[in-house]
Length: 111
Length: 114
Image (cartoon, rainbow over all chains, first blue to last red; front, top):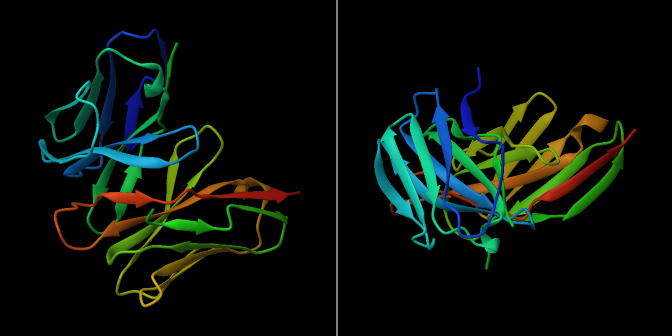
């Protein structure tokens, strides 16, 4: 069973479109995250939710809106996509003692 | 500047040799975690070492942590071609309301030649 799963794995879309990436974890963790990995492989946190409550919101354009319907899900909605949004987006969940576990990533390409 | 900087940026070795990667960081931490990322794939959690631990082992992996020097090392013994990947360290900063926010380094690209 996949611990942290995100869909889709690949997403190609045109500038100006709105898209969503879904994430689910079956680990029972309370905290979930979205990270962005740029073309130079640098990973940076975007958002963190703890038990459905937003606790970290880094400097991210407000076109990006996370939504957590329950503590096992954290979706990422992106409005008015721009070329610079092209990256790999990773969902993760964490346990205090065991660390953070990541999904397989969603490669977003904006054309 | 960036927390969790890895050294070297790239490492090329022969199968069977040991590979050592280093990570330096700047702030106090709760823990430090190492991850592997194969080309075009997701991040695989390798090992977590807490700030009060000095060494940890998992299979062929050995991680050390020196909080006085704010540095960690990852040793992969008897490397295999399948170990070829990028390796990242990530720090979970102490204090504040970080809630497990990880700060990643740029990674070390390890290539193991058969």
